[in-house]
Image 1 (tube, rainbow, N blue to C red):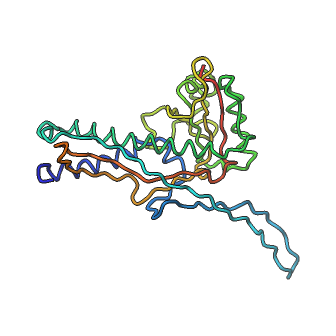
Image 2 (spheres, rainbow, N blue to C red):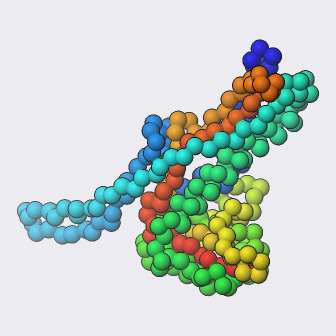
Image 3 (spheres, one colour):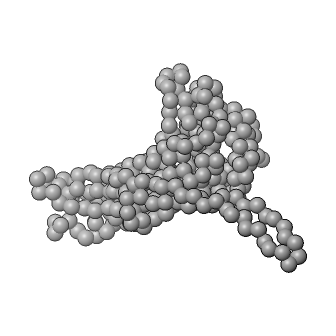
Length: 280
């Protein structure tokens, strides 16, 4: 490590963390995150709904006996490495370091989004699936998803999110209620500034390119999602994304590696709705 400056290593690690938090993953901040976990998995607790009761004067109260259950997120390990030739250290400038950090951090971020999406779709109730991928998204589809969350008494507290594909985003822009400023507002989240995101129906809508697709060509469809933040959990080992730079003599190069061990799980499937709609 004597041939590479300490400032480069420190700068690299710092930029990886900034890129991961702000740009690498679009969905990490839209779910419940449990960090610094020790172990190969973590559990999230779900507390059921309670019902208030009355009591007679001087009588005993009746416990709600709220149901407590747990769901488990099993961790998997992911890596985003790249090599820097030893002689390239004389050519690396600030822009090159930024390119390396963004490439590694974004790769990890995309994988985290993939893990979250897979967990959201895994145990979703059939009644919470709108469409069969045979028709494009409509205003009625959006309102039905909104109604399903309301009927399940999912909190309307500003922590609802909707994630759609690029084609669905274009479709939404053709819907007057979504496109006009009088119906929508700017998103409230700093980490979504500069990206395609709007606030509509009390929900933050965003465009995402990594959603699950079915079919191909004219029959290609996308499984879009609407959910509450507390309905999906993400667990991470240690301090989340980790970066390191090691010299590999056999390659006469430095291995710049970004890695994470993480897993996601649907905490409350009733708080998740899937809109299975055609791309065209």
